[in-house]
Length: 457
Image 1 (cartoon, helix red, strand yellow):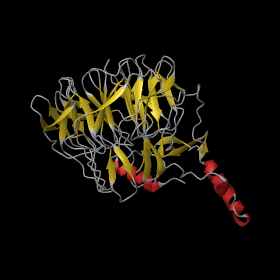
Image 2 (cartoon, one colour):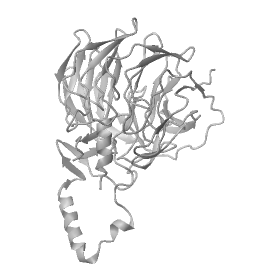
Image 3 (cartoon, one colour):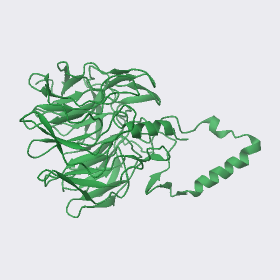
Image 4 (cartoon, helix red, strand yellow):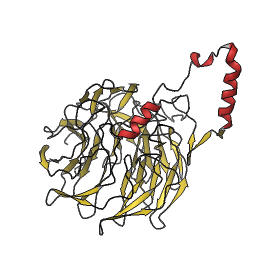
């Protein structure tokens, strides 16, 4: 069975709580194999009905195709054994930043500005779940001093929004919602001007969205896709024109999806992959393996190869050679697999396993072409998780994952990472622990830290 309570909660709240099946909610093992003799035939009938819904290992749900959840942790066969020990020659270091003006548990955005400073906006404060308060505040960090200063507050408190650096240096923030459990999602958008430190409202989106993506296109417009606004995950997509401050609808996705990834490829198309198809009412929900491509010239979507695994809360990173690395959660489970998309072939292939299984991770492309992954969680139950401080890197040249220095803080989920202009990686916010429903969440401490892959050398 699927834990619909967990799914409903995740769809309503959005980040920092990702949407996925609960590990262990699928019935397996001896208990699932011993029906009582008097109703064994009834069980067989139910199984037969279920099989009648399945075609080629897939189930039709709503407007999309969702693969049947697998009972094993991973169907991908790793091509090599991961390296589990820290390289003694690893020069990397971590350094804590100054104290943040407002510590943030998740749902905030982190944007590298054109002057090299970093803007952190919105998100959720600490507190007790449910009831986390969304924030309107924003602050800046100076990478040279690692100190924080307040800047203007947004016109609306929000978490789970997107933030996109526009060509003129302004930042577009769109959508999101309120993480305190009331289910509100926003269609509003606003602009941050680094020259004045102020926010101003801009045109509203055509739909309310949380769990959506925003991608800056080569022509300077911003493509927003999917998400949830109350009801089924959106198939709709829209474009923001900075010149007019207006949104216009564009071609619909083939598959409605939320908490998916969107990656601008070298040829200017956008790859949307995975995510969750669901209903806010909890009546149906499931992670996706499907992927599709948006062509800005025709404003239409076409299907491309499906991922090997169902991924409802993974990361996607464009490599220097044009391929896309996807890593993280599979079918709600916390497993170490990752895979690569080849745009030339339109297909996916497995990579070796990560050193550690993790979900709710961050993934950042380093200047040397490696992918840096940090933090994440291993879930103990729907509302309890074990957070990770560990980190590792993926080397496309060797196709292997290698452990690197661990963070100072456990960052189980809600953290956001961005690469600084000098190649270091700033990781901001997150939860060290969430002990259960109606219990206080414990914020990561320090609130932010910086990873230097070269140790300052």
